[in-house]
Amino acid sequence: MGRLRIVLMGLCVWMAALAACGEDTADEPAADDAQPSLAQELGLTLYSGAITPIEEDVDDNTTTYTFDPEEGPICMRGDPYRMSVRERDSEDLVIFLQGGGACLSEFCLAVTKAPAGIPGVDILRPDLPENPVADWDVVYLPYCDGSFFAGDVSIDDNLNGNGTRHHRGLANLTAALEVSLQHFPNPRRILLAGSSGGAYGMMLGGPLVRHYYPDAELVMMADSGIGLGRHNEPEFIQGVLEEFNMLRFLPKDCPQCQSNGHLTGVVGYFLEREPDVRIGLYSAWYDAILARTFFQRPSDNFADGLDEQTERLHQAHPERFRRFINDGIQHTSLLGDATGIIGTDLGAVEVPPDTLTDLISGELVIGGINTTEIDGLTMATWLSALIEGDLDVWVDVQQERGPSPD
Image 1 (cartoon, rainbow, N blue to C red):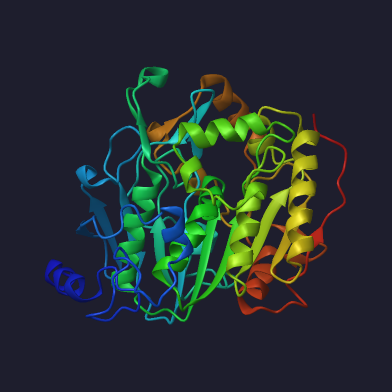
Image 2: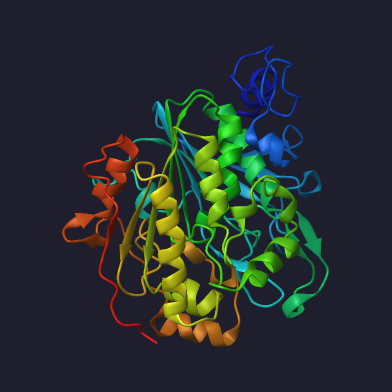
């Protein structure tokens, strides 16, 4: 796709809610007789309509875009933000949020650059027969902001001697969705999926995707991360929200959005507002990356929080929120290898030396859609049933919780 086409399309569909010239654009106020979207209510449309992409061709059906940092999108240490699209002549669209840690003053493990192109992880492989979205159009968002695709602040604390931290996840997410709307204005179905930090990004990413695509069928898959924090320690998640300047984006009428140290109530709030959305969750009872690396708490503490918080969501929405939880320490199920978390450029990963040793020694266990299974039910089959709405196969399934590995 050439630059001229982008300009012409921008005149007609840039931020168009229904992808047609002359209609209200996404950044404009809602019409008097229309209700504002949840994203508008929460202030998540802050950067809508204010970002212009710069095209970089990669190959015949994949295009990468770079953005001007002056307009908002930027990686954590100042590198430009990039994202990519792959066109497959499909009616369906997968929007995938990359994983890659988080960077807090207390602990920083994060990817700091956004590469061009689309990685060959399982969920994005067009050549993997078991991949239920193999022939779908793709919007791929690298994760390099260290703030769950939701931060909106720069912090000049020279953490680790690396200068300013630019937590501009909301601008990065918005920029990618505006390009998505240009390429794919009217998808029939959307799978919004994210792994690790990308799964946390779905908490506020879900309302923003719905804002851009109000009429598409929306299904979401959270791969290891759905707003969990330190169980019974609400001050931790409060500190994360304040440091990333995210507190203002939580619903004011949602006292349950911060519950017992977690943000899973945000997911419940979204399900209440969007009665047609289905959400699947993958986790392991003792996910070592979340429990021991990020939260720095005993594995049982993480498992207790996972059980309590996800059971609450499932009980409230039994046919629209279901879990796939296996035993052990595995982190993620959609990727197949660690490039889906840390990328291929190890120089773009900011990580404490002692933590790097733990990861190399076996803490980072990455599953794939064929290798992650419970009693013969693979993630590939379960994910396909989630997408198709087959409630007999998309079951709420959990392996028995074994002894803590600690």
